[in-house]
Length: 118
Ligand SMILES: [Cu+2]
Image (cartoon, rainbow, N blue to C red):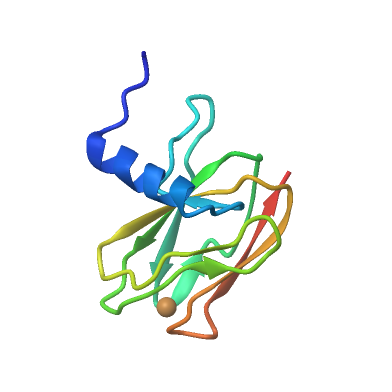
């Protein structure tokens, strides 16, 4: 085993797998050959609000606001929901399915962004 996953992270991954989530995973293992783009949540906006990534990419969402946020998608094959994300917290999402992914915040309906997975 050359890739060690911290126990806490492995537990999260196991929980996700046991939960039977078919699409995106939250806090899952990161493939070694992909970069990890960071999306900022600032001024109640996603910045940048349009990105293109390859299948299997893990994206970090960093809450740089003084408000709680949330990140979720109902786009087919890439469904996930971060639940409440406090200020300073990072959420990692791995996108496993090619297509256009619409990202939203449940707390601020005007917060949206688009990710093209190809
Ligand atoms: Cu928000």
